Length: 287
Image (cartoon, rainbow, N blue to C red):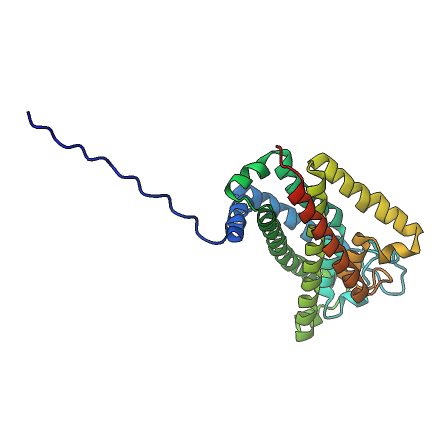
């Protein structure tokens, strides 16, 4: 009887993951952001906020002779200010200021949710470095926010261009070289605003490790404390992070200069990142 030798299949060794640990963390997080459902929801929200907020701001614009609501994002843009080269993107910057509380809650929930659902512990099995894992997540969130802001700025500019003539606003200067410079400056301010919000939201999310607690703390601080206490204490706008971010986003909305706000925010960011790193390193991930 002839026996036929059996060929034992050999298993190929597993391929080593490509890229650095940080790039792999970024790629893994990008998968969540680029889901069709997430993109659709984000696109709808951006369209509603950008188009609706811009239209309301332009329609509410009054001549300089009429008093506005005073300092702050609730102050009305004047028709004279909207006729300047930066008028088209100034409306978007003002609209973005109204989303601060919402954005802060989104960043807090995105970070704290990983601990609440237990997915952070699972991800550590593939990426043992906690710092790189969190940095990859926040990097994707910030890049996504910047991309959304760019789309929102375009929608806001087009909407303002269409609505402005009905208010007697001359938009000829918007398409000039000075208008382009003003648009780049406004987008840069929005970028700094988003990065600052992401840093503070990440710190709260890591410390709270709970979506309800983290979002609750963020809402209480950014709402009643910063705004109500800020109205009664003259020095609040020089120290409260939300008011400092407002000063960067909308120059003149507070008495704090952009330079002073950036220096103070940089110090806060350094403290927040240090606290976040210590909390990540020393606290156990049990869920």
